[in-house]
Structures are given as C-alpha cells and as structure tokens.
Length: 269
Ligand SMILES: [Zn+2]
Image (cartoon, rainbow, N blue to C red):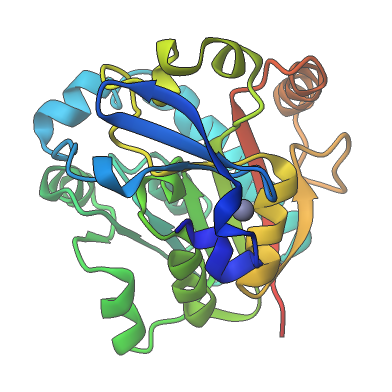
C-alpha cells in the first residue's frame, strides 16, 4: 500500500505501473498523482560514500551553487526576516551552509554521509551525521529548514516533514527543491529517463511529485505553502542575475521543461 493511502486517503486500488527497469518498479497513484517506488525494489540501494559524491560531481561549480543557495535564502528571508538558525537536511558538501555562513546566519547541516560531513567541517561549517530524531531528542529549534534534492531520498517523506515540523519555531519555513514528475522528457521516456532507471537515479529515489500533490503532502504534515516556483517579483534582496534566473525558470516551467520543483512553506500553528 502506498503512503498516500495512509496520509491522503487515496484508494490503495488506484496504483498502476508507471515505469519499470528490470526489478525497479515505479507506480503512480491515480488519486493524487504521486509516483512511488515499489517496496519490492527497496533493496536496490547505493551507498553515499566518497565515490557517490565524486560521481555526482557535487564539488563542481561550487561558486554558482553557493549563489543559487544565496538567492533561495534571500527568498526565505523576504518572508521571514528574522531567521536566527538554519538546518539543512542532506547538506552534502555544504554549499548552502556556506551561503548561510556568508550571510551571518547560524547553521547546522546533517547528512548520512561521513565523507560529506568531514568535507563540511574541514571548511569550518557546522555539520553532523546525527538524524532528525536525534535533533528532536535534543530539543533543537530552527527557523528555516532547507531540503535541496533530499526529500525524494527518504522512504517516508510524510514522516520526514512531520519531524521537520517538530524542529521548527513558530512561523518557521521549509524550503524544498525536488525533481518535478511533470518534467516532459521524464514523462515521455519513463524508464529510459534517469528518474526511473537503475543506471540513473531511480534506485536512489522513492517518490516523485508535482506542485499540486506536493502541496497536499505539505498540508497533511502541518504546513501552508506560501510560494510555489520562483516568484516573479520579490520585495527586497534582488539582483539582476536573480531576476533573469527567476524569469527563465518560470518560462521553463510553463513549457514543462523544468526538472525541479521549488516550494516554500510555513509551519501552521
Ligand atoms: Zn495517492
């Protein structure tokens, strides 16, 4: 049974095969549209070691990635000017942590990879291999939780979002970047696209969302969406490069060519 039956009330009978690459099967729920990896293929896994990070080239183009994180932090700050502390779940090699540090925002990154955490701490960034339940047990609190291409790596995204909710102060924000299930090429190619293939990222991910069903997931876990996609205009913190980037992303989105969803949501009190 897919998790949306439990959390969104979808019928367990409405799951249909969507993409299959050997033993790797993805099924779509006709009620909510979420595309779930079938639990029978959960044993197909990849370790998050140095080789993983090298293969992803995560250290490539670091300066641009820090700039992108800075834009996203500015977007969050425009909705919540008093962000005192940031948590990044799945901090990887620390691009967002570095952006936060440059802005003078105290931060903590968590990652399952010791390689990633070592990489961050050697650069003077705060990072740990502790889990969300560990932080909850320590009564840690944050004003912004950043999840950049991370939520799709968890078997139960609902549980992760509930745990994040427990770690947020009142009015706290969650910023999610995640693959877009509506991306035209992936919809057309199915298991021949990296989203759903064993050679691609199909064995790293557990679910694919669109803007509509991700909003339902967020509503069910205690959040209100305040911004889908990049905004056309922002009140402050704007730069010409961000304006061009934002308008470009909105155009890609209109054409179904946007590989990534960007969603900012706020804890509901
Ligand atoms: Zn469903």
